[in-house]
Image 1: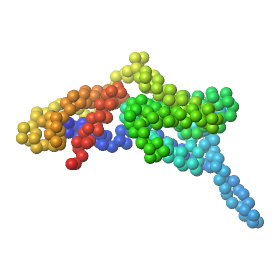
Image 2: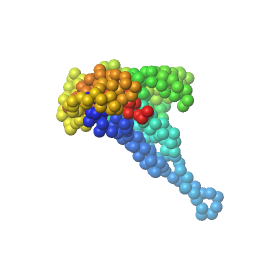
Image 3: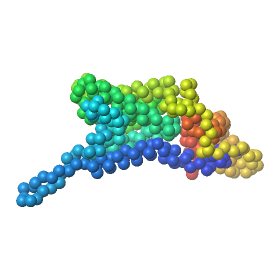
Image 4: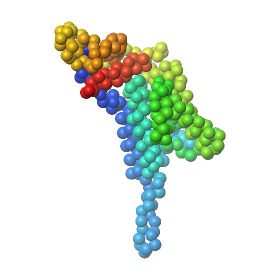
Length: 328
């Protein structure tokens, strides 16, 4: 039976629409966008005379009441406003739209691929823990130095996601300065070099460097020791494997049907003769066998139960089969 005849491949649109299987990424982009609009809407305005009698004008001070409530202000946090060690990630400088655009582009470009590997819930948990650890690091170093300005944006979580992506795909290509293609591992190295160079030169806030390094270190430990944030919640176990559960399956796995006649198989695109849709080359039966096992597991226990290797199989199979479906 050909892979194209299977119900889970033919009917599941998530193979073709990345956003459909990147719910956490879409949620984060919308969340950051909503808070940015709210920040701009709450920017304070003051009245100024314009030199004519009884005439004034409204000018924007650039200060947003919402931003001031969310930002990681070290002194206010130490005074008891502890929510700031997390909420700073939701805040971006009002009227500095480039900041929010970079965050959104990064999440769509890199974040959704990490979500594909770990699942939406685990990805959100990883993002949240990275944010918390970065906030704690900024608070500690800021309290020691005593000169740190308020922190805005999810820089700690963004660094953690970037490093985790680089650990999985070190040779993937990224563009440096928007036009120079370089491998991801080199991009991360340059990222770290600028932080260290700026720290040595006194041009970079030490607390901000601590946020980046904390995110990078957490991603390295998370990947090296195969940590899973969801396993720390009720329902996980100490061995690092998600407890079995039986949700409604998102993919339907069916038994193979009898092979078609040889003549029909030869003329069918993606038919069941163990031949590819084009060129007559043999189908990778080993990949198909592993894919069947992975999809059986998804149907029984959910996508979050998959290991890193099994998610790699899903991604590789998706790329192979999408290429074969393209019209010649």
